[in-house]
Length: 310
Image 1 (cartoon, rainbow, N blue to C red):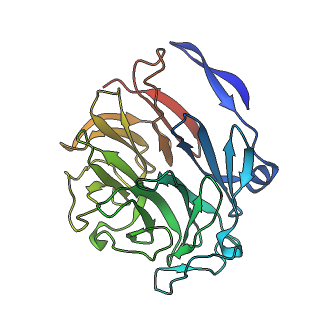
Image 2 (image 1 turned 180 degrees about the vertical axis):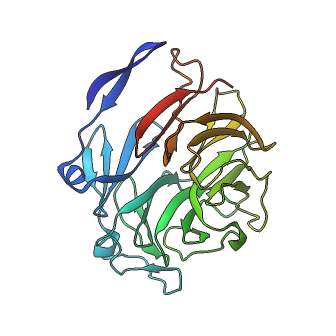
């Protein structure tokens, strides 16, 4: 990895760490990326490619390719359902569209979950690379999010006009109401009391929050404001003691918005004039140069970073 520097007009140089992609990733093109923070403070970076490959990077081992679960003999049973776990080829002529990670409750096992343009959800053990059976949906996967429930962690995935739920090695179980229409982005939002909600960004411009144990009705006020589809969503805190918030971006209305989910209030709106498709809220609490939270967003016109004064 190569350290470099960017520059902020107020704070001066900010260190940026870069690492070159493996040749296959550079050749095929990067289509999704996520990371996982381990208990010892180390980080794994996971990337998905246009060709359907998944690779993992860590400081000790460098880049490693995850096995294709559709080309590996699986030791676990295969289910045969409409939305099912399948051993049919999943990543041929397809691309990775979404990635997320989660730790299995009360264990040290961590899964990386991938969703593809051919409608598959795959699970790999992040430490060993071991693949698990594939969950197959009827359409391309738009987004993924992992959230705790009373029966353990479940994975939400958006496909066609449906948000469904699944677990490693098991068929889909449950879905959000069809009245919400197409959902283009998902994330989790954790309230101050530790309760975790699923946040959905819809093609109707509406953000909704759901309890994983009560999927028929929104758990908190519905957030209205975007003119057109919500294309990315992220949760963040301005500081360790500040209340948790949501940030969203819109492709058609070109805005970045910050919300207080408990009240439904829109706290901040930034009009960029460019269609936006991606968003993240990096943790900056331990950086004395950054007094306010930072949002990173981008689209076909490029990427930008702003500090948000709340």
